Amino acid sequence: MSENAGEMENYTFIPKTTTFNVDSNKAVTSDSQVINIDLAMSTEGSKLQKCTLLLTVEQDKEYFAWTNMTLTYQFAEPLSTSMLSTSETILSTSSAQKFLTRTDEVYVCDTEIPIDFGQNVEIVFSSMTFQAFKAEDVIRSDRKNTIIIIMLHSITF
Image (cartoon, rainbow, N blue to C red; front, side):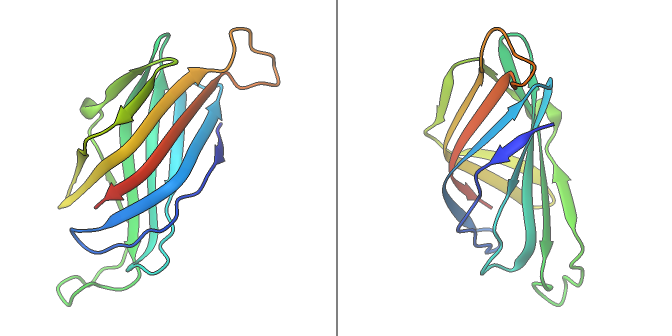
């Protein structure tokens, strides 16, 4: 359904104060009405063995609705004796928190945007640019009709 390019780098997890700096772009092309953008983060040097963020975007005529985010993470070992489980955890945002972007416009996040996932997990997006556009008016059968580009410079847990 989608073709992904780009990779997240330089991720370090420290409970409640994690900042992960990214100087990569994520581009997704799709001919579907629902586009999933999977941001797989490197866990090297962290206490996690897995961390991914899935963004769901629904396409309308003139808008893209960024409807949901799903965070999946797993600790390599318990952080404390009270935390015995290292099983995979999946948290999703409410679809009521969606925001809309117009086709062919660029949105730059100059301020921090906190997203609450519940269970004491909040992600703060900063230095982020969104752009979604239709590739061309007349779509050939061998071309995708939508391209979404996200330039993400930092996420704080």
